[in-house]
Image (tube, rainbow, N blue to C red):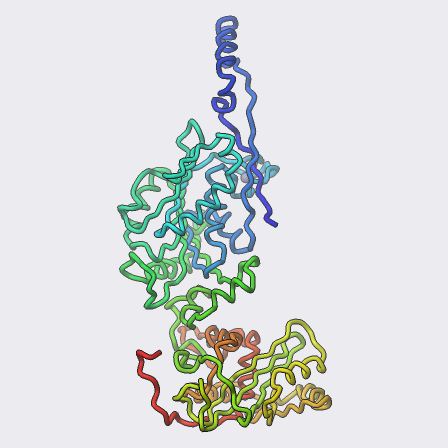
Length: 513
Ligand SMILES: [Zn+2]
C-alpha cells in the first residue's frame, strides 16, 4: 500500500470561480461603484488536495528531500530512481516545503513558516530515451490526476507539460541526450536521468545556463555503464557521470554556509524494500559479474580488478550450465555454521570420461559445485541434516568439512552425532584464512572451480567480494565485510580438499565465450 504526501494547493481564484465569473464581475462592479474599493472581491480561496507518493526507502527519501544545489545519484537498477525523481519533481512543482516534507506545523521553518508549502517551481525532467521519460510521466500524471481532472492544472499530453493555469509554473518532461535536444526555457529545477548516456557537454553548454536565472537546482541520476554494453549512448566518455560523481563525492561543506554545493548518493538495487525476489531474480538472469557490479551494486570503474577477491575466477569459462553429475564422482560438502546462516556447498570431483553436457575443457580433479543450501531462518540440526541428505540423495558423499579449529568442535560433534559427520578443514588453525584464500585463488587460476548457473549464492559473493583497502587504495589481505559471505566461508573449508590440476584440455577460442 502506498502512503501519500497530501498537500492543499491554492487554486488561483480566477480559475476556481471561472464558472461564476459573470456573477463576480457584477458583484465587483457593484462594490466598486458603490464603495470605491476594488479589493472587496470575496477573498475565499479554493483548496485542492493532491496525493504524491511517499518515498519507500531511506535512500529514496534522502534524495527526494535533499535541497543541495547539485545532487548526484549513482544507483542500481530498480532502486526507485524514477519514482523518486517523480516525487521530487511533483513536490517542487506543487510547492511542497522540502524541509517540512509538506507537513504543516513547524512554525520555526524559515521556508514555509509552518504551512508546509512554498512557492511552486518550474521543473524540467529529461532522459535520453522515450521509454524512460514515459515512466516518469506516468508517475507524475498519476500523482496529479485529481487536480488535472478538475482543470486546475492544464495537461498537454503531446508536449508532456503540466501548467498551473494562469501562470508560467510548469512541470515538463522531455527526451534529451545532447545540448540541442535539451535546449529551451529557464527552469528552477532540473532532473537529468540516465545521465551516463547523455553527451557530456549537456551540462556545461545548456543545462547550467538554463538554471542560471533562477539559481536553480539540478539532480543527476545514473547507473554505472557496463563496459562494452550494447545500449545506445551519446556519451563520448562512457565514464563521464562516474567521473563527475568521483570528483564531488568527498566535497567538504562550504565553511561559510556549512552546506555542500554538491551531494553524492550511492544506492544498490537491494535498498528498495519493495523489490520482489522474483523481480530481482529476473534481473539477475544471465547477468555477468561485471553487469551485476555495475547495474545492481552501482559500482564502477573505480573498482580495480585486483581489489576483487575472486578476480582470478574466469566467469566465461567456469560459470556453466547444469549437467548430470555422474553418480561415481566423489562428492564432498563444505559447511559454514552460524545461528541464522548455516550454509552448505556440495561439490563433485571431475573424473574422466566427461559426461554429456559437461564442458570439454574441464580438467579432471576440478570441483563442480552443484548444490547450495542456505535455509531461511533458524533451523534445528536435524532439519539441516535432512535438507543436506535430500539435496545430495543418490550421490556418493565421501567427506564433509567445516568450521574453525577453535570453538566449533562442538558444532561438528552435534552434526556427527545425528549421522552427518563433519571434519575439521585441512587448512585450519589461527590465521588460516589467508592460506585458505590463497588456495582458492590457485584453483581459480587453473580453472578448477566450476559453478552451476542455477545457483546464484556463491556466484554473487564472487562478484561482490572486495579486499579491504589501505590508505593508498592498495588491497590488503583482509576481505571487506567478511562475515557477510557465508558461501565463501564454506568454500574456504571445502576447497582445501582439492589440489586441482592444470588444464590439459584446450580452452575454447575467445569468440566461443
Ligand atoms: Zn517548511
